[in-house]
Image (cartoon, rainbow, N blue to C red; front, top):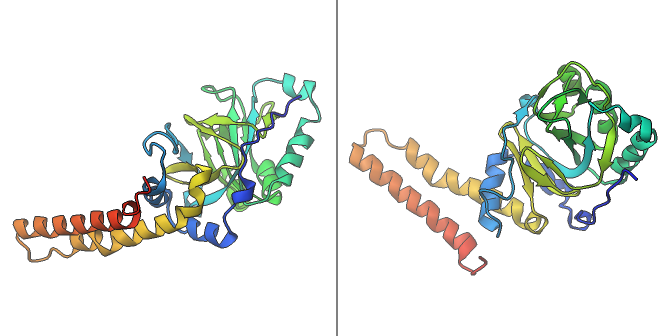
Length: 260
């Protein structure tokens, strides 16, 4: 049996479409800034990619969606021969999950790249199934055609061929770029990398990201731009005062109620 079913999905706690749209308006570092204020996890180790990723469609901006997961091994022809029904069964799984979805692909060939799971055809098929993009620690090809399909990709590299790309396991925990991802996990990704949000942090994420962005724009950023005519001492004091206000605002928003 190729399918490893995980009960770790969080479909019951999904954010509204409106909230997802608003979260997509910011880059991934801004979402991280909010997330680190509300989580009990180690913000340096427990959520974002630990290895370098490449965003091959940075002009598309950020993507956000819930993870659907699959493992592939393009260099091994035995998977297709041993389970010819796997592709249909995998697509049925993807179709059964509400969107928006991001396909997270673990490539067992790494560190070698022997073929690309993603290209023009697969991107269009998954777009029709409600997927907005992919994060794969393997390769992609047909970059222009994938972009035209509206399907964003973060990947390890480009590749010419597809080899024996075939689903091996799906709806299971996967590990990509040093990060373990579970099916149903909320992911925000852009050219900086990706953030996999723990289920318990979803509900407060938008408010936290919105607050942190506004806090920066009302304190430390304008202070750094309002230094014309100041002496060095005045400038440093001005920015220090803004920094203190920034920290006080964070303290008042997130720490006053003893949440952590």
